[in-house]
Image (cartoon, rainbow, N blue to C red):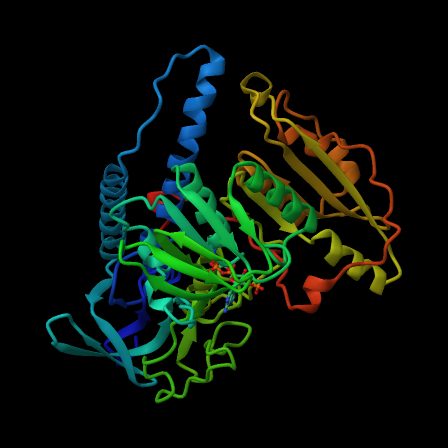
Length: 491
Ligand code: NDP
C-alpha cells in the first residue's frame, strides 16, 4: 500500500470516472472521486438518458395515431410538457442516487466540488461552500468529459446548447437547430415528434458526415417527409430577440426565420482547461484534449485520462471500456489495450439509425488500396406495422461485404429499433462474420431484422469512381467496442 491518502483519485463522476472508480475499488484499491456538477455526468444528466426518454415520448405520438388502424378509438393527444420534465427529472434524480450508492457501496469516497491538480500526486477539491480539501494519490484518473461548443456569430448567446434543452419550461412552437451531427439530428426529430415546427440548418451538403451515404440520403428523405425543414449549405449569420420574445434568425442564404428557440449542436470540446493539468506536467494536444498513450497514461506518469477529455471517440460505452482498461491495468495486473474496431453506434433520430463498421465509401477506398472489391446488399421496404397504418415510412438495410474474403465489414440500418438490431450484428462483425455465414443463419419471421440474413442480390457495381469526400474531410469511422446495456447496476 502506498503512503498516499488513496491509491486512485478520479476527477469526474461521469460514465468513465464512475466505472473506473468502481472497478478499481472492487480490485482492492482505496479510491476517491470528485464531482463538481452531478453524479453520472453528461450521459445520465444531459445526454444519452434524458435524450432517450424524450425520444420515447416523441415516438409515442406516432404510436397513438397508429393505434387507430389497429382498432383503437383514441382521442387526439394533447401535450403536458412540464409533466415530461418533472418525470424525467425524477428519474434522473433516482439515477444520481443509484450512482452515489454504487460508489459508496464499493467504499469509494465521493467528494462534491471542483478538483484541481496541485502536482502529479495532489488534488485539491473546493466544495460549494469554499472549503478546500487536499488528497494525495498514487494514481490520478482524469475523466472530466466534454462540454457543448457554443457558436460565436452575433446574437449567439440567444441560442441554447444541449445541456439546456432538457430543462426547457415550455416546448417551443418553432425551433431552429444548428448542426448536422448526432445531437442536431436527434433533437430535430424529438421536437418535431412533440409537435414543434422544426428547421435544421447544416453548413455542409448533407448531414451526418462520416455515416454511410445511403443512410444519410434515406434519413434526409424520411425527415423531410415528416415535415422537418432541412436546410443544407446554410449557416446562421445572426440572432436577434424580437419585442414579442421570438427570435429572428438571419441565415447565410439571406432569409430570416422567426423562431421561438434555437439549439446549437455544433460539437463538444474536452473539459481539460482550468484543472491544473499543465502544472502537473500533463500535455494537451492541438485540439485541447489530454494526450495519452496506448494505455491512457498522460505525459505525467501518475496521471491517466479516459473518455471525452481525450477526444478519441465521444461515446459513453467507449469511455466505460477505456476506464475499465485503466483500472484493470493498475490494480488487476492486466496489460490491456483498447480495441476501437467495429464500434457500433445509433442515432436516435426519427426514424433511428444503427451502424457498425465501414461505410460503403470507406470500404471501397480500402479495397481500392489493396486491389480488391466490395459487394453491396441493400434493401428498402415498408415495415409490416405500416401496412395497416398507411404511414409512408421506409426502412433501409445495407450490408457492405469485402469480395475477396466474403467478410461483412459494414451493417447499416435506418428504421424502427435500428440500434437494437445493429447491436447483435456488431458481435457478428467483431467475430469476423462472412456473408455466407449470415446467409446460413435462419431468419426470425416476421421481423425487419431477418432482411439482413436474407439479402441475396448484390447491387450492381457503381460505374462512377469512388467518392471519398467525407474521408478527405477527416470523418472518423464508427468501428469497435461492443455496446453497453443501460441498467442501474451497470453504472
Ligand atoms: P457532432 O460532432 O456529431 O456534429 C457536429 C455538427 O456541427 C457537424 O454537423 C458539424 O458540421 C457542425 N459544426 C461544427 N462546427 C460548426 C460551426 N462552427 N458552425 C456550424 N456547424 C458546425 O457533434 P454533436 O454536437 O452532434 O454531438 C457531440 C458528440 O456526442 C457526437 O459526435 C457523438 O460522439 C456524441 N453523441 C452521441 C450520441 C449517440 O450515440 N446517439 C448522441 C449525441 C451525441 P461538419 O459535419 O461540417 O463538421
